[in-house]
Image 1 (cartoon, rainbow, N blue to C red):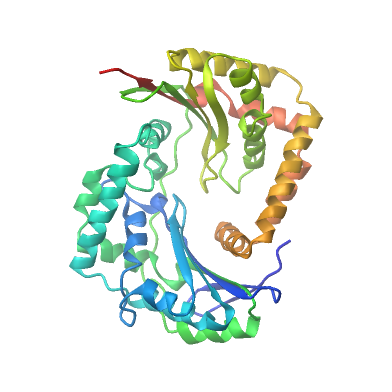
Image 2 (cartoon, rainbow, N blue to C red):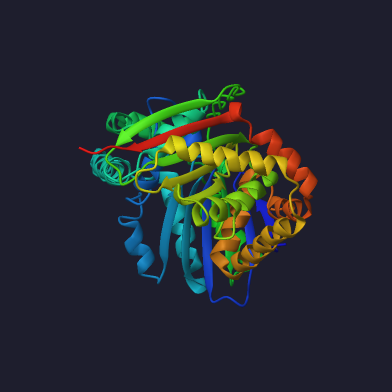
Amino acid sequence: MLSYQKFYLQNGLEVIVHEDPSSKIAVFNLLYKVGSRNEKEGKTGLAHFFEHLMFGSSKNVPVFDRELERVGGSCNAFTSPDITNYYITLPASNLETAFWLESDRMLQLTLSNKTIETQRKVVMEEYKQRYLNQPYGDVFHHLRDIAYEVHPYRWPTIGQNLQDIEGFTREDVLDFYENNYSPDNAILVVGGNVTLSQVENLAKKWFSNIPPSKTKANGIPQEPEQKEKREKTIEAKVPTDALYKAFKMSGKTDKGYVAADLISDLMGFGKSSILEQNLVKKGKIFASVGAYVLGSLDPGLLIFSGKMESGVSSKEAEAALDAEISKFLQQELPEHALQKIKNQGLAMKSYESIQLLNRVFNLAFYASLGSPELYIEEFNNKSNIKAEELSTWANEILQAEKSSVLHYQSITV
């Protein structure tokens, strides 16, 4: 288990300290419990857009990156459907600089029209380059749209369309900031060559005067149960056909999540997986294939995806995939294959624990789910699950009527 100590400020900021005297550096990770899941239709992409805005200026910090580089630090951030995460790595002796920088932009970020318009151009260019001008780039725009009817997971973090990004007003941006970027909606984890008393003093000094948000978060629409298969076909100038088949599954902290994760690993993770062996090495339909889960806080997706060999249609590929899924559901799962996947999970956990940044982020992420203890709880649940239980869950999850299928078909012009 990752060692940690925790305390709260009166304004609601949750602070977690991970002491590692063997490290010469410190990692400062500030997680905000907001992502594209918290957006409304017509205003999609705001969470990701705001991540860009946070690297502008604040009242006492003209250029965020420059001030950090002066003390030998570096930083980055990412937005997901469920969270927005900012992290700084710097010499432990310069830790206070991170507190200064992050507290200043939490309390008094500069949101001038010039900054908003500059970042709007950057994000719109990112949207075009990564999602519109890349082969298969808009896959998740289409797949999410057919898999979800009302939940905000139906659009990707970049946004549902360019029009939404073009339409953000300064009032939209200010509302988003005031509603989400507050201490009571954040989790701070500091790790490395630090002490609890040091972090307590710095947290109180730099964050205690920031007021909590006065607004209450809106509820997230609950996705209705899916009772029939959904399909969509896209024709585009891509090298070959591609297939994406998604099944509804449990949310990250719900019963059945670890089973779905293991099912995806058994069927489609790595060169020794069932799909790789049967559909790529022994078959002539798939050029590549895999399976994975999205790891969503709310009920998410277990996805099978693959690219076809030249001239092979995605319809033919789906039939081959369905045959493998049917076979998987009917057979008794071999314990040795399950144990191999569990061993890979143990190896991954050990690898993650080597890097201080990974340890700090895991503490922040699982705290956002409810408690840092959920990290080891999830691992233990995965390690202890039996083949019979996994088979039961597989038959529950991999039902045709719970699937959403995207056929991405190649056309010649």
